Image (cartoon, rainbow, N blue to C red; front, side, top):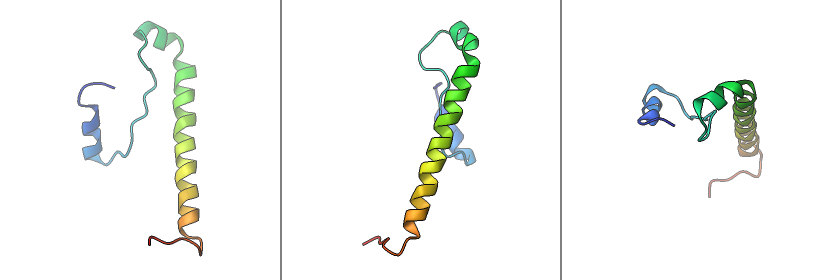
Length: 65
């Protein structure tokens, strides 16, 4: 991520997922569909994990003790 990228959290954004990881820009351009698809899949996996936590929280066995 770029320098100061985390300042985006100040605007209500909760998370950042990168699409390129240490590769030249030209390669990233050539693989953009693959890279964006991968980032989208990781995002949806995180959303699903969060939804599962909510379900568990609402279960009768959930306790913060």
